Each structure stands twice: as structure tokens, then as C-alpha cells.
Length: 153
Image (cartoon, rainbow, N blue to C red; front, side, top):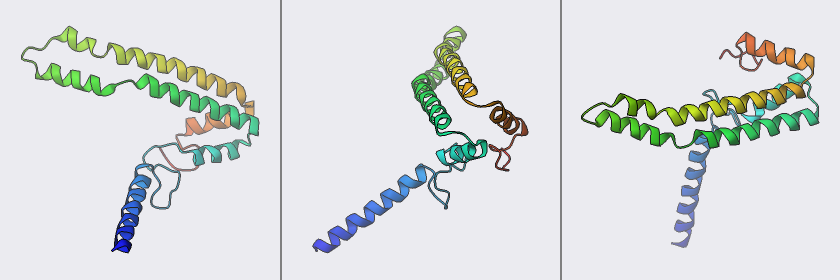
């Protein structure tokens, strides 16, 4: 009886680990890659290899990206509240255009802040790279490939 309980707990744990892995993009043999537009650390390290970056450059770039991700997470705020307010406006008996437009004031302010933060992040990364590395990044962005690895976006 005791073995049955342990076995059941193991099966449940395995199922939970498998489900967690799929939510985080670790499935179908593509560890670290998200199949739908994600930008995993493995891709970033491959880009570093192509750019022939120094450890100091990599550390500065990773710090800038992590800092931007934190700021983006903070700037995102509570978008569910916006969705709820839009639903309430649509559900109301009379549509109030000024009130509806005001729903988007805060998200637009946050987006403006995020744009400024992204500009600072890109400027910091730009300063970190050499002219040759900047040319490579520019070519990758212009060519519309997935970070220079031959996959169309």
C-alpha cells in the first residue's frame, strides 16, 4: 500500500514537471528556444559567438537586457484592468466616448516610458559594441532574419 502511494506521487510529480516544461518552451527537443517568437538565452549566446564579444561586453549586454525586462514588467502594469474597463464600457447602456478614450491614457503613458527605457538600453548596448559588431547587428536587423541564423521572421 505504501509503495502505491509513493508511485502515485512520483507519477503526479513527473506530470507536473512535464507540464511546467511545456509552459516554459522546453519541449520537442528545443531546450531554451521558444517556438513562437521568444528570444532565449541560448540564441543570445549564439549571437555573442557570431559577434565574437568579450566577456565584459556579454556581461554589460546581459545586464542591460535584464534591467530592461524588469522595467518592462513594471511598466506593463495591470492590463487586465484595462480589459475589464473596456468590457464595462461596451456593456454600459450609453457609450461615453471621453471616458472610453481615458481608459487608454495610463497604458499609453506606460508605453511611452517603456519606449524611453528601450532607447536607453539600446544606446548602452550600442556603446558596448565595436563598429564591426554594430555593422553585423545592423545587417541582421535589416535582412529580416532571425538574428542571423537563417530563419525568416
